[in-house]
Amino acid sequence: MGTVSQDAINQFKALMDQVEEPLKRTYQTVHQGYQAETLARFLKAREWNVTKAHKMLLDCLNWRVHNEIDNILMKPIVPTDLYRAVRDSHLIGMSGYSREGLPVFAHGVGLSTYDKASVHYYVQSHIQINEYRDRIVLPTASKKYGRPITTGVKVLDMSGLKLSALNQIKMVTLISTIDDLNYPEKTHTYYIVNAPYVFSACWKVVKPLLQERTRKKIQVLSGNGRDELLKIMDYASLPHFCKREGSGSSRHSGYANDNCFSLDHPFHQQLYNYVKQKSLESESSQPIKQGSFHVDLPEPAVEGMEIAKTIESQMHNFEKRNGVSGSLNGLKINDDSDHRTAHCP
Image 1 (spheres, rainbow, N blue to C red):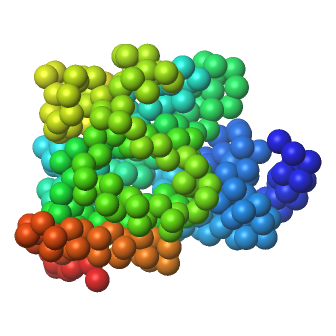
Image 2 (cartoon, one colour; image 1 turned 180 degrees about the vertical axis):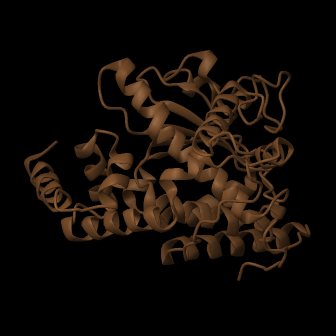
């Protein structure tokens, strides 16, 4: 780390040392003892501008306090069948670790439908995975490897991506905005696999819109990417969709405990059992309440909106050229406590 970078971190730390409760407590939850690495992440997200990074982190801490994010790992999505439906329609999981100790997260981008529950449940589930990663997975890896591990690797499976994916762009943009504002620079490298032609067409126009530091993190691999990924991780840590000889659906695999998207996979079992146990401890063994954990939904950043519109435009053009039809539906945002249905603008 250069002198300029270290100076920026020192200035930033001096500002954060002045933070008082309740922000101080949630700040400790965020950095988990790795304060310099946390400050560096926010600085990177704001091009090493201390003033802007300071505002970003304070906004994040206020968001956490206002939405009680520190308590979100005490709020299981129940009943289990509802959580299983969320897992089956938002395909994400952890398949193992890279040889450097970075957790490997897999995302089934092409086959995630986000159509089995309200938006609030998907947001709650996503934040819970983020928080479990940051409070349990990364600190455990850091202790095991004897050095700070504060980022992970993501493998994005594009198999099944088609025009109907337009239905999910708004949901993906919403989740990405939450991550960009409150969990910046948590991914070391993105590996894109099983990319169909429609992805290639979109990638050509989206790539120039991305910030340079983001572009440098993205690698589009051939086929299911197995050979390239085996250079950085063992076979056991490969996502299930990278283990097959040919490309294909990432939603299912031969064995439930091998499919890292499934609720039956060890990672999701550990996460779900952890949240249920914390809930019982916090509620003094009272029955776990149903209903989603509401989090304020942010307005997408200008950059994110531009990318979403570009993808939508490209996919419409692809539709016209190939004579394929695709429906554009809104997102349901009703739940147990509020039976109104709205559509994302």
